[in-house]
Length: 329
Image (tube, rainbow, N blue to C red):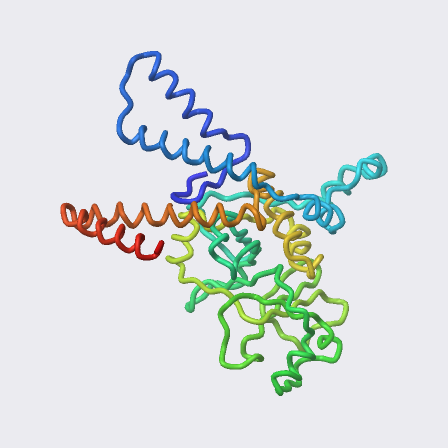
């Protein structure tokens, strides 16, 4: 998929099959494999071994799939298909375009956390973020699928703060955790998105809003500099998706707001497909994945040390092995 670290498979593309076919041609032609290709083979073999271990420990997905079927993002059941027109079927689906890692992010885009990267990133595990603002202070994102179990009124009472701009009907609205970045007070950490006639705005005028409008509150946010977000996308931490219809963006932002994993699953399925949406995660699979990631980053550190220190890296590796033995004891 163009990412440099975490693979983002593209629909209808099979890179591994192309590589296997190419290696078979080289073998029959008697052409030696260059070191870079040998390293790729080693990594593919390691990935295949990891896949075998994950298959053996694959969790039961029935609970996840049942919740998705019951959510507002589910596709219509077969019995309902005959009664729905093609336009109605189109409206039921999330229409998300998967963008390449180098695409320029813009307000209204979605970031869907990669299921492997987020194994070690608890604050963003199974996250769907809306890019809500882009200004001098950086890019602001709001996590759309992390309910906190409290209303705006409960938050204001707990913080002992009162602001007249919050109308009475707003106080019953649930508050979601928008991200790990907080301000000095609860109220200063509040953000909101508002929609009227499918037009979504960020932190608009609360006093001008009507009870019939769609409104969501968030505590905290995520922020990146433009360069930092570009690097994160390049490395494949996030699947970058762009809603193709206003209805799709509205559904992600305002429907099923109390679901967490359902929203991630539906967005990933629409943007990439089942290959990442059904990536094996769970109590049995996660420890295997964590160990694989630790080994990956350790190998990266060793390669960097060899490049930086040359002959001195042997001493660095000796000390690393000594540290491993101490930890094991």
